[in-house]
Image 1 (cartoon, rainbow, N blue to C red):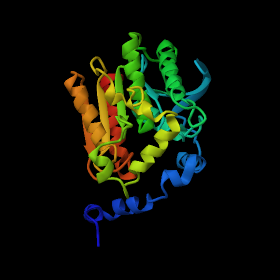
Image 2 (cartoon, one colour; image 1 turned 90 degrees about the vertical axis):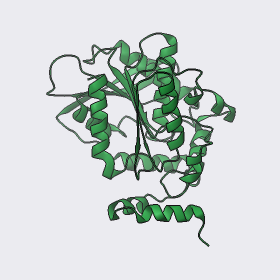
Image 3 (cartoon, rainbow, N blue to C red; image 1 turned 90 degrees about the horizontal axis):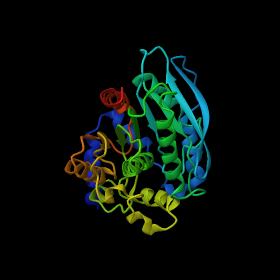
Length: 316
């Protein structure tokens, strides 16, 4: 007998084009718990591809100081753009907390962002769990933001024109950094770009069950990566892990939240957008039809155009 869950999924799949249906079928994989950290990292390296040289973007590496030691950072600067300060995008990479480490892994993606948006991209290689659990990755990202703000002019931008962002767990870290920067009263991001972001590690939302299996990211996948990040599971109730629990979201910068209709993280994204709106924050919420977790290849061009327009409006 077919369950109501499978009946809904099949109905959704039947409405897809052949290209989109093939994407969902190819994205089926063992659970992250079955794969384990090392296999996840190997998969991340394969997804990252081989870094390529693009003459329209120059890049160089720096090492910055952090509370837990040195943090490597790669800077991507678009060439041939107009003179004057450029926007800066501080990219906190995704990867279920444990993956996508190393400066090379996200190089192609960061080149594409810099080339397409005209912004300088700053990409920190922050420490990853389970070797470095909470709050070490968060501390590294906060140190990276402060460094970027302090060196913005040297990077060709301005400290008041920095957008911080990322996807999934990177979006989680970026969100918390923005809150911490606001609370410290120092330089703060001018904008946030958050896609498929973890806003609530308690994971108790309808979408976690509605989209649990067969949509690229499952409820248990989320629980597994949170277990790698948080040594104490009770930390899920701390807003530094679950930013939707922050006492106030007032004073945060303009924010673009993008999430898939079929992402397990959909409902916490809706809830965070609602809280931002209620706090008087300028928020754009985009729920992408027939999208699961992340950005599918057939939505990549539209997603980049949306990001470029947001960056141009707020930091460009």
